[in-house]
Image (cartoon, rainbow, N blue to C red; front, side, top):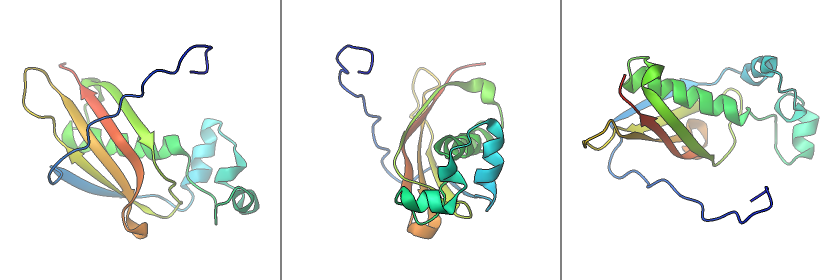
Length: 145
């Protein structure tokens, strides 16, 4: 698994069933990848069209962690009234690319009622490409404040 031992089985999040409880759309600014570079990630894949083409993309792509952050913020704002302190864990599988200027469709399924706060299930797609998956198996584990 990269550290000299067996990788072991990969646990997969259960796919949500039924219609989402909430769906929101978030536009990605045309200059979002350039702004995200201010975090210190200067990978030319996100800014240089020639480099992006050489890597097999028709244009620069958004940083995966930027996409993840936008989706996570949408969950916190939409289902948790902006209270990120209620989050205990988060995970996702990067399933596709996002291009600056596209729109993210973020579908959220509230936790099934039970003894604990539960886990929000999330799926994120790119609207302009037929809701092509960009984040899959995203989960946001909740805790009590």
